[in-house]
Length: 365
Image 1 (cartoon, one colour):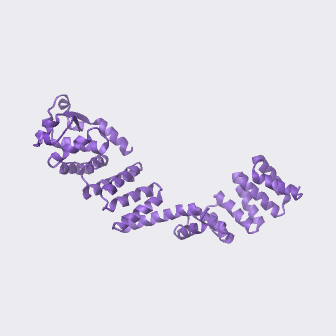
Image 2 (spheres, one colour):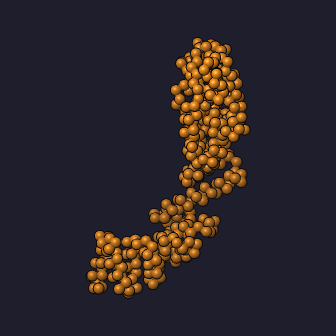
Image 3 (spheres, one colour):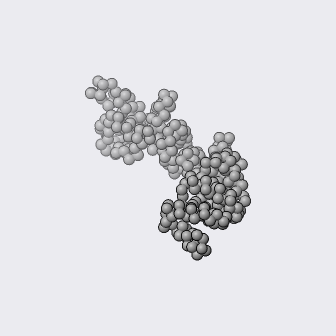
């Protein structure tokens, strides 16, 4: 369950008690003229009220911590809640309201009721920007995120708020980096973990492991993106990862693709051999091997790999590559046979038409 769903359910379960604003302010020893309180309902967790109290009670008989807890639940559960403005006026009037809610949070944590503890602390950030409050909020959110990935977005929201309100703190950048990393947004994770370190965040063993993990993932993703337009840049990012991840077949496939685009077909074949020795079921690598052997003019080897790729994919592009290799290898009958197959797959394919025209013009029958 996401936090927003939990918060909505929690708020729907609270009992809202109508209070006389002026009277309540007076009971707190303050002058109502100095505090403009409109009509307001204060939430109370119904678990605090016995059945007989629900049917008839006096507000002044209720412990003030019940009211404090309820208001912080509302502040943490819905930032747009109708009475939040009034709660923000009332809470500072209540003596020890902040120590009170901190004690309630501590009790919730001891009871392992982490979501309610988080909700209350989230509400406290509407009143207080204390370092301790944000540190505990981020810590609890991370413990929830580890068990429930739906909290990734919640953690990012909390981090953004902390960054905005406490620009001096490094910690929110660490926790946002963790969330981004888990969501596969490695470029953002890399930016934030570097910002964490730039702001003086501790670079302990755990952070070092996380940093390297994020950097490797970011290099991997950016390397893939650079394959087509910037193969040299792709290799700069991908090659250092090959030694770190010796069992990663796909990584070697990407490295081979970059080498082919640079015209270094021998290197491409080397990394494709490594790739297929790890996992020989990667059809893209089999096809790539055929293309590289064809580029080297080793057509018999190219045919071997392209036939295997075509048998697995029945892909028109693989088929046309195979036809060209057959023609270059002088295997005319096989070329004609596969041209018929290609036409059956897609007779309107432009490459198929070009091959057919070439064969007619060169009297290849």
